[in-house]
Image (cartoon, rainbow, N blue to C red):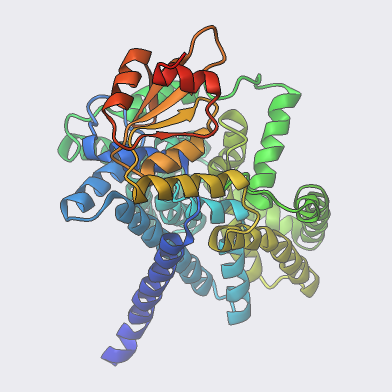
Length: 491
């Protein structure tokens, strides 16, 4: 009896450990490019000061600092955080699917959709993006909102669970404040949705209580990111994109971000063959639009009334879903990571649909959609693991990094036109060196020093002095003769 009771838990732990190990192996041996924020935190985490700026990832960085205190390297800490979060996400998807009564075949379909079905999600994991750790938390929030509680006591427990998950997610990434904001209007429907309105009110208040309590007790002295980013969110202000909110340019960026999460992530400096690029960017979006349209029409025809009642009965889920789809339009629409909450809602919707005994035609449509989107995920994974479709600049920067480490070259002088993501990769993988960017497109040659990926002007005379003291400096072959002459003092 005891063995039977513990068997599911043992299998869950075993699956979590196995998936964590698999993701760690992919990340450690892949050797691909990472996200800009990943490079940045790998360099500044040793001198991290949460009291200087409003840290949007305060929990993430404190966990990293704790892992550093245990003797782990910064890169190892990021790999472990990414791998454990990815494993928790996959295990939670499987647990929800089994709890909803899916067969093994449909469980396999859901797992493929939840992992490879979004090339954008695959890229987030491979880039070791800081969004990955909150994926299981937000999926848990979606599922708790979806469930119908038996009574007020159960609804209160669910609300407290939502509050803890949302507070943790906001401490990992403050952009998740859009989820409690989406729940704020739900209590207005108190008469028609009494239990869900009550649960939403408790969840929003509980999220704030937990968020501020953690800041007061654990992160005392750290500036509170919510105070700086909540006004920006309420004003619908996007400081990263110049396109007006109501414009064709903004709409094009929105559709580009949607395509990126579903088919064609613009990461890793990928140079796809013409045929593959055409298939993912031109053909596949039209095919997916046709498939999703057919699926929507079929679903409305067969289950329209039941679907409308179910959606209205779960007003809180609808509110979060609408905000998740609208959020990328309002803030950084072209970035894959702004679409992850919407993708999590779609994964839960897929589980719910497959659990309601859909027709064979609907299941076949879902399979084709998963296959089409999964091809994009496979292309991304193959590129990262096998270095396929690689930009020649990527190969060049890795060769430069090898030379810097093998021959202990320092300082390093590169042209100011050097790609910044490649510069971040180079400075991270060849640490302990002074990097300078040389600009010779003006009347005089000028230099910028690179410090924790920030660039500051440096007098040319100081760079010359550094070169005079150096035993094995590295001057990029891409530097112009004029720049070299200015650096060496030659006429």
